[in-house]
Image (cartoon, rainbow, N blue to C red; front, side, top):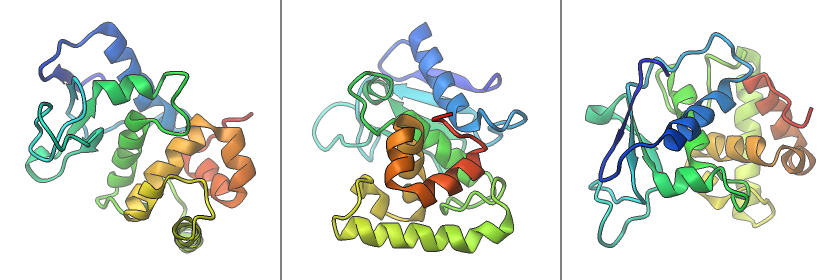
Length: 193
């Protein structure tokens, strides 16, 4: 993250902001000591949620964070409120900034598809896809405690499951042992240990 700029829109960047963003970046790659986020140039911090037009005032502001594509490629946009909540005692299984950094890991192979090919041996790809789709079906039936946002697509499933993996690892390991095993292999981490 040395080359990554952190900018504020409508807000000044504090040392705490920098620490929380850096922590969010390190958590998913802690087991990958040589990893560099080559697909990130700027983190843009908004004071609160924002809308599809990147406005942080007015109605329909429901975006907590995003990794840009197209003309926003290399940019990560984060809500300060979501960033701070991800490290609060009331966070639950969610951490928006970790979620967005996991998208960058996923995107590093050229596709944001829920299959981090740079981190996953080829023989695990089909079992991972099968496992994702089985769990997505369980979520649809209301039989899973994974956030329903994971149903959006495979990429969101990967990021949502990773949030849970890092935020509540013992609970995740107990409730989703097979997914836990795959994520532990991908991230080369075993958080409860």
